[in-house]
Image (cartoon, rainbow, N blue to C red; front, top):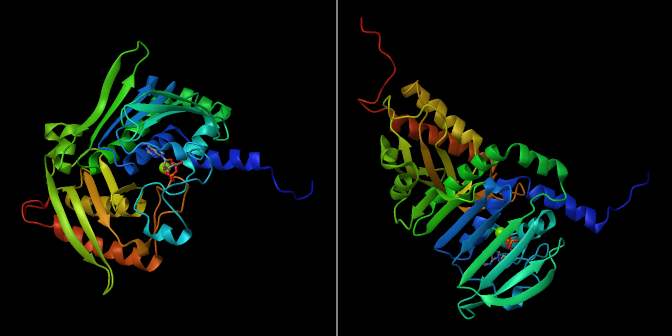
Length: 354
Ligand code: ADP
Ligand code: MG
């Protein structure tokens, strides 16, 4: 076969499959859109653990009529004008791919109202390519409701994967959502699940707290703060760049850590991220002091945008730090953590008595 360009349609199918690889990607994109829209109340409802779809409702800016046509088209975004801007993005989304990809792999209905339109709003229907196919006027309070059903209707392997592993996929979604619920303050977020019998249950919620500590209590209960210490420290990388470290870590007394790594959350500039090297480093240092447990980690790194590339993977979870600075950062962090845990009374290495 000769070398040919694949059709637009096939390109579309391939790239949508990259942005949206599982249920948790959809959830991530939708909650980020709701946050970007300046919402201070978000409800996310899983229908039968996500098997029958999800709904996300926010009270944010809403979408104006002028944007309906382009809303779900590929690479249409209100958040990024050019590539230079990418360095300075403050919003969680910026590529205009999510809604388009979700249209491609499922059925989506959007209801929305801006403060100008409310209590009137619009219900919008889109086809597989993200084209607006129908709009009707309805009653709706300010904000946006997005309903996603028929997940992975055209991707049989992923659909089967979700059906077979739905409990695991649901747990993955809750774990991901936990990171947003923890870091976001002054916002009310409720996560529901509707089970097979139709019962709607709250899985997790935060209650418009101004402090992260109150988010922790909301999510993990009143014992959630036990053994946690505040972290507030500047890591000076060089004359030009400082990384501010903020958050909470378990102290190193045995009993105050956890038996598994279930509560370890990293953020860069308040974006939940995966940074395996940092997690590994933190766990290995903690082990020197508390050899039985793992620390709870909730750490936000404020890092200058110039040192970051958040556009590495379609899901934006991986962040790249320039090589030189990554090593400096890891080194400074190591020194900080050694000092942080190396305090009288919390040193737990068994001592040979004689
Ligand atoms: P991106 O977030 O990268 O811009 P998306 O496909 O996620 O791309 O969203 C496309 C556009 O749709 C956004 O730029 C935004 O203008 C609008 N949008 C999406 N979700 C919401 C929402 N919940 N509230 C208001 N506007 C939204
Ligand atoms: Mg987005």
